[in-house]
View 1 (cartoon, each protein chain N blue to C red):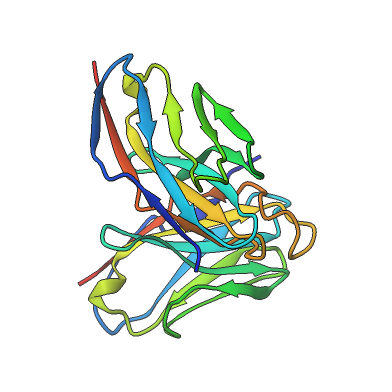
View 2: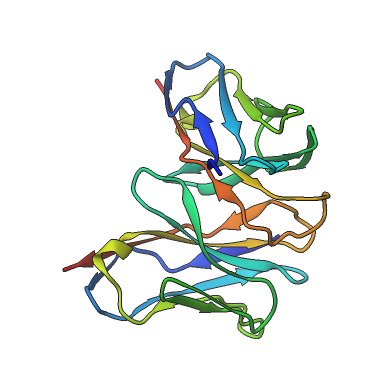
Length: 113
Length: 118
């Protein structure tokens, strides 16, 4: 079945450091890929998405490219801020799965000033 | 537009009891999905409703059920609560014209209901 694997946390960075959170997936067909972020005490917010191979999703300085050849969707940001501290989830929606999102286990990011 | 709202935000129950959680989607959104979030299992899909019909279901026992009303509001019910049902239950809504279309439509999540089973 479909699955998502992302790097374990927690990840601790200093402000302005470069961020990479790795995400790989297993899926049949052509899934859509997402990154969601969860701030403490809140629900999930969509950070970015990509719906086909080689698409690049971007938002608020974060980027991720849908790589079908490596089945990856790594999240990157060039310069993190303290306000980026949160838990990040990689997710996929299978081509015949409608609203069913399959999530990775989440990566907690802590950014220190 | 108002976001997805969930009530109650916090709930404490004892083993064996049942519980009903409510979700009001964003106005105009006809699809509602439910997820369970726990530290051990992470985020897991429970079910999705569209036009008052369950369209997709995750791997949860029959104690977990749901329904959707004509105004798209949804409820989920857990009967015979177990300690392991303690979790954050998240509801998400998305805009959908017809089932099977646009799987990439963004799902908007509510803040969740924190259920504690003692």
